[in-house]
Image (tube, rainbow, N blue to C red; front, side, top):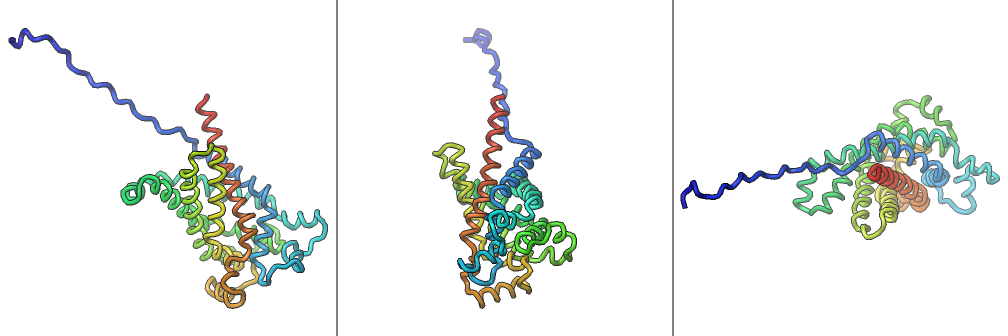
Length: 304
């Protein structure tokens, strides 16, 4: 067969490669708004428990049934006065918590892609895909949490309002700048360790609980993350509260040595139960609201 007698074959045309679209996501402003709403919801539902935990940690004597009223409720009598004592400074706390959670959840989500690009390949090579997702989430949480020290003056004013009954604005604007940043060392340690463990546990829990419905998965993962947030950095949180409360003078090292010498090592975990009930459940509630609202809005956008 000569070349001219061969059947004509048209050139093979390759199919155009379709660009894979990124998974749907919310805008940064939507995430910050949802996070702020979750923070205000925390205060509305859990402020009383949080105030009780703060006063318990600040006490240098054991809390018993004989002195509980004076330490935890500041001698308030009657249900109305007790509630007023536990919820003092609530509007300012809601504003602070809205800013804090907007930063916690919104900023953490914003930096996670960058952390994944830098650290993700090495983690996946050494530990696998699942570990990559969990550790990237934990590292992002630690970076975010350490940076949270810029809000320390707001936290100081909130603690003063809860423990000493000082108005939020007075504590914030009539206090020397050095006092506003009192407790910065234990705060950075608590935040770094707590932020890492919180979001590491949260991401790992979601992977292990994938057989449950999305709502159940989000709720259980948030509870485990909230518990880890309290238990892992508990000693640093106790020292921070002592230093901010104003009744324990000295540096971070001096307050720590004094506490261990006078009250024992277990005093570093003082108020752990109310902290788990207050701070752990409060953070879990905020994280659950944030994750659930994100999923709900994304589902609505997909359907439309």
